[in-house]
Image 1 (spheres, rainbow, N blue to C red):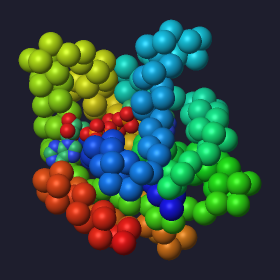
Image 2 (cartoon, helix red, strand yellow; image 1 turned 90 degrees about the vertical axis):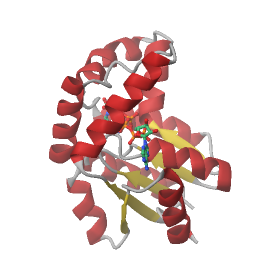
Image 3 (tube, rainbow, N blue to C red; image 1 turned 180 degrees about the vertical axis):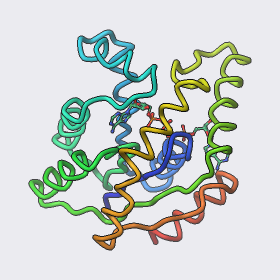
Amino acid sequence: MNIILLGPPGAGKGTQARRLVEERGMIQLSTGDMLREARSSGTEMGQKVASIMDAGGLVTDEVVIGLISEKLDAGGGNGFIFDGFPRTLGQADALAELLAAKGQTLDAVIELRVDDDILVDRIVGRARDAAAAGEPVRADDNAESLKVRLMEYYKKTSPLIGYYHAKGQLRSIDGLGEIEDVAKTISGLLG
Ligand code: B4P
Protein backbone atom coordinates (compact mmCIF):
# COMPACT_ATOMS: atom_id res chain seq x y z
CA MET A 1 0.00 0.00 0.00
CA ASN A 2 1.34 3.44 -0.95
CA ILE A 3 -0.20 6.53 0.60
CA ILE A 4 0.34 10.28 0.70
CA LEU A 5 -0.13 12.40 3.83
CA LEU A 6 -1.10 15.88 2.69
CA GLY A 7 -1.66 19.01 4.75
CA PRO A 8 -0.25 22.36 5.82
CA PRO A 9 2.89 22.73 7.98
CA GLY A 10 2.23 21.37 11.44
CA ALA A 11 -0.85 19.39 10.36
CA GLY A 12 0.75 16.25 11.80
CA LYS A 13 2.01 14.52 8.65
CA GLY A 14 5.30 13.49 10.24
CA THR A 15 3.63 12.58 13.53
CA GLN A 16 1.10 10.29 11.86
CA ALA A 17 3.64 8.83 9.42
CA ARG A 18 5.79 7.66 12.34
CA ARG A 19 2.76 5.90 13.84
CA LEU A 20 2.09 4.08 10.58
CA VAL A 21 5.71 2.94 10.43
CA GLU A 22 5.38 1.41 13.92
CA GLU A 23 1.96 -0.12 13.35
CA ARG A 24 2.23 -1.37 9.77
CA GLY A 25 5.93 -1.57 8.96
CA MET A 26 5.54 0.89 6.11
CA ILE A 27 8.45 3.07 4.99
CA GLN A 28 8.23 6.80 5.72
CA LEU A 29 9.56 9.01 2.96
CA SER A 30 9.70 12.53 4.43
CA THR A 31 11.25 15.02 2.03
CA GLY A 32 11.56 17.45 4.96
CA ASP A 33 13.68 14.91 6.88
CA MET A 34 15.76 14.11 3.79
CA LEU A 35 16.47 17.79 3.18
CA ARG A 36 17.36 18.40 6.86
CA GLU A 37 19.70 15.41 6.73
CA ALA A 38 21.37 16.76 3.58
CA ARG A 39 21.95 20.14 5.17
CA SER A 40 23.27 18.76 8.46
CA SER A 41 25.71 16.48 6.65
CA GLY A 42 26.90 19.54 4.73
CA THR A 43 26.44 18.17 1.20
CA GLU A 44 26.54 20.70 -1.64
CA MET A 45 22.82 20.24 -2.17
CA GLY A 46 22.17 20.66 1.57
CA GLN A 47 24.04 23.97 1.60
CA LYS A 48 22.05 25.20 -1.40
CA VAL A 49 18.64 24.41 0.10
CA ALA A 50 19.32 25.61 3.68
CA SER A 51 18.42 29.26 3.11
CA ILE A 52 15.24 28.36 1.19
CA MET A 53 14.08 26.07 4.01
CA ASP A 54 14.92 28.53 6.79
CA ALA A 55 12.89 31.23 5.05
CA GLY A 56 9.92 28.86 4.69
CA GLY A 57 10.07 28.48 0.90
CA LEU A 58 9.76 25.32 -1.16
CA VAL A 59 12.89 23.65 -2.46
CA THR A 60 12.93 23.09 -6.26
CA ASP A 61 10.94 20.21 -7.73
CA GLU A 62 14.10 18.87 -9.36
CA VAL A 63 15.87 18.40 -6.02
CA VAL A 64 13.01 16.74 -4.14
CA ILE A 65 11.97 14.51 -7.05
CA GLY A 66 15.60 13.33 -7.24
CA LEU A 67 15.57 12.46 -3.52
CA ILE A 68 12.31 10.53 -3.77
CA SER A 69 13.39 8.72 -6.90
CA GLU A 70 16.52 7.39 -5.14
CA LYS A 71 14.44 6.09 -2.22
CA LEU A 72 11.92 4.39 -4.49
CA ASP A 73 14.77 2.64 -6.28
CA ALA A 74 15.85 1.21 -2.92
CA GLY A 75 12.43 -0.56 -2.65
CA GLY A 76 9.98 -0.84 0.22
CA GLY A 77 8.45 -3.76 2.12
CA ASN A 78 4.92 -2.87 3.20
CA GLY A 79 4.64 0.21 1.06
CA PHE A 80 5.55 3.88 1.26
CA ILE A 81 4.12 6.77 3.22
CA PHE A 82 4.87 9.95 1.30
CA ASP A 83 5.13 12.57 4.06
CA GLY A 84 5.29 16.14 2.78
CA PHE A 85 5.68 15.01 -0.83
CA PRO A 86 4.29 15.93 -3.31
CA ARG A 87 3.96 19.63 -2.55
CA THR A 88 3.41 20.91 -6.11
CA LEU A 89 1.49 19.70 -9.15
CA GLY A 90 4.84 19.04 -10.87
CA GLN A 91 5.87 16.77 -8.00
CA ALA A 92 2.51 14.97 -8.15
CA ASP A 93 2.92 14.24 -11.85
CA ALA A 94 6.48 13.04 -11.26
CA LEU A 95 5.34 10.71 -8.47
CA ALA A 96 2.65 9.19 -10.70
CA GLU A 97 5.32 8.50 -13.36
CA LEU A 98 7.82 7.06 -10.87
CA LEU A 99 5.23 4.69 -9.39
CA ALA A 100 3.92 3.64 -12.81
CA ALA A 101 7.47 2.85 -13.95
CA LYS A 102 7.72 0.41 -11.05
CA GLY A 103 4.30 -1.10 -11.70
CA GLN A 104 3.02 0.38 -8.44
CA THR A 105 -0.10 2.35 -7.59
CA LEU A 106 -1.07 5.08 -5.19
CA ASP A 107 -3.76 3.74 -2.86
CA ALA A 108 -4.89 6.81 -0.92
CA VAL A 109 -4.18 10.47 -0.31
CA ILE A 110 -5.06 11.50 3.24
CA GLU A 111 -5.56 15.21 3.75
CA LEU A 112 -5.16 16.37 7.37
CA ARG A 113 -7.32 19.45 7.92
CA VAL A 114 -6.24 21.85 10.66
CA ASP A 115 -7.10 25.53 11.18
CA ASP A 116 -4.29 28.04 10.71
CA ASP A 117 -4.36 29.33 14.30
CA ILE A 118 -3.87 25.79 15.63
CA LEU A 119 -0.98 25.19 13.21
CA VAL A 120 0.75 28.29 14.54
CA ASP A 121 0.20 27.13 18.15
CA ARG A 122 1.63 23.68 17.41
CA ILE A 123 4.73 24.92 15.64
CA VAL A 124 5.50 27.67 18.11
CA GLY A 125 4.88 25.04 20.85
CA ARG A 126 7.36 22.63 19.24
CA ALA A 127 10.02 25.37 19.14
CA ARG A 128 9.35 26.31 22.77
CA ASP A 129 9.46 22.67 23.97
CA ALA A 130 12.71 21.98 22.11
CA ALA A 131 14.36 25.11 23.55
CA ALA A 132 13.20 24.21 27.08
CA ALA A 133 14.64 20.70 26.71
CA GLY A 134 17.95 22.07 25.42
CA GLU A 135 17.35 20.43 22.03
CA PRO A 136 17.98 22.06 18.65
CA VAL A 137 15.09 24.27 17.45
CA ARG A 138 14.20 23.94 13.76
CA ALA A 139 15.32 27.10 11.99
CA ASP A 140 11.95 27.36 10.22
CA ASP A 141 9.85 26.92 13.37
CA ASN A 142 9.28 30.63 14.00
CA ALA A 143 6.39 32.96 13.30
CA GLU A 144 8.04 34.69 10.31
CA SER A 145 9.01 31.51 8.39
CA LEU A 146 5.68 29.95 9.26
CA LYS A 147 3.85 32.79 7.55
CA VAL A 148 5.77 32.02 4.35
CA ARG A 149 5.25 28.24 4.78
CA LEU A 150 1.50 28.75 5.03
CA MET A 151 1.44 31.07 2.00
CA GLU A 152 3.43 28.52 -0.01
CA TYR A 153 1.03 25.80 1.10
CA TYR A 154 -2.10 27.63 -0.03
CA LYS A 155 -0.52 28.80 -3.30
CA LYS A 156 1.41 25.72 -4.45
CA THR A 157 0.28 22.67 -2.45
CA SER A 158 -3.45 23.12 -1.84
CA PRO A 159 -4.22 22.67 -5.61
CA LEU A 160 -3.28 19.02 -5.02
CA ILE A 161 -6.53 18.60 -3.08
CA GLY A 162 -8.55 19.13 -6.29
CA TYR A 163 -6.03 17.11 -8.31
CA TYR A 164 -6.41 13.99 -6.14
CA HIS A 165 -10.13 14.55 -5.59
CA ALA A 166 -10.61 14.39 -9.37
CA LYS A 167 -8.78 11.05 -9.39
CA GLY A 168 -11.06 9.70 -6.63
CA GLN A 169 -8.08 9.18 -4.31
CA LEU A 170 -8.62 11.94 -1.74
CA ARG A 171 -9.72 11.21 1.82
CA SER A 172 -10.02 14.37 3.93
CA ILE A 173 -10.01 14.02 7.69
CA ASP A 174 -10.11 16.28 10.73
CA GLY A 175 -6.55 16.64 12.01
CA LEU A 176 -7.62 18.72 15.02
CA GLY A 177 -8.14 15.96 17.58
CA GLU A 178 -5.63 14.23 19.85
CA ILE A 179 -2.78 12.46 18.04
CA GLU A 180 -4.25 9.10 19.08
CA ASP A 181 -7.70 9.94 17.70
CA VAL A 182 -6.31 11.14 14.37
CA ALA A 183 -4.29 7.89 14.16
CA LYS A 184 -7.46 5.84 14.74
CA THR A 185 -9.29 7.70 11.98
CA ILE A 186 -6.42 7.02 9.56
CA SER A 187 -6.32 3.35 10.53
CA GLY A 188 -10.07 3.09 9.92
CA LEU A 189 -9.63 4.55 6.44
CA LEU A 190 -6.78 2.24 5.51
CA GLY A 191 -8.52 -0.87 6.82
P1 B4P B 1 8.33 19.26 6.67
O1 B4P B 1 9.45 18.58 7.35
O2 B4P B 1 7.46 18.42 5.77
O3 B4P B 1 7.51 19.95 7.85
P2 B4P B 1 6.06 20.36 8.18
O4 B4P B 1 5.15 20.38 6.99
O5 B4P B 1 6.22 21.64 8.88
O6 B4P B 1 5.52 19.34 9.31
P3 B4P B 1 4.39 18.23 9.60
O7 B4P B 1 3.04 18.43 9.00
O8 B4P B 1 5.06 16.92 9.32
O9 B4P B 1 4.14 18.45 11.16
P4 B4P B 1 4.51 17.55 12.40
O10 B4P B 1 3.90 16.20 12.34
O11 B4P B 1 6.00 17.64 12.55
O12 B4P B 1 8.88 20.46 5.74
C1 B4P B 1 9.86 21.41 6.15
C2 B4P B 1 10.42 22.21 4.96
O13 B4P B 1 11.15 21.34 4.03
C3 B4P B 1 9.40 22.91 4.04
O14 B4P B 1 8.97 24.15 4.54
C4 B4P B 1 10.24 23.05 2.72
O15 B4P B 1 11.15 24.12 2.81
C5 B4P B 1 11.01 21.75 2.66
N1 B4P B 1 10.30 20.69 1.91
C6 B4P B 1 9.89 19.52 2.43
N2 B4P B 1 9.29 18.76 1.48
C7 B4P B 1 9.31 19.49 0.32
C8 B4P B 1 8.82 19.27 -1.00
N3 B4P B 1 8.19 18.15 -1.33
N4 B4P B 1 9.01 20.23 -1.94
C9 B4P B 1 9.67 21.36 -1.64
N5 B4P B 1 10.15 21.64 -0.40
C10 B4P B 1 9.99 20.72 0.58
O16 B4P B 1 3.78 18.31 13.61
C11 B4P B 1 4.16 19.61 14.04
C12 B4P B 1 3.91 19.74 15.54
O17 B4P B 1 2.53 19.53 15.86
C13 B4P B 1 4.69 18.73 16.37
O18 B4P B 1 5.19 19.39 17.50
C14 B4P B 1 3.66 17.69 16.76
O19 B4P B 1 3.95 17.05 18.01
C15 B4P B 1 2.39 18.53 16.87
N6 B4P B 1 1.19 17.75 16.56
C16 B4P B 1 1.00 16.92 15.49
N7 B4P B 1 -0.24 16.39 15.52
C17 B4P B 1 -0.88 16.92 16.62
C18 B4P B 1 -2.20 16.76 17.19
N8 B4P B 1 -3.12 15.95 16.63
N9 B4P B 1 -2.48 17.48 18.30
C19 B4P B 1 -1.56 18.28 18.88
N10 B4P B 1 -0.29 18.46 18.40
C20 B4P B 1 0.04 17.79 17.29
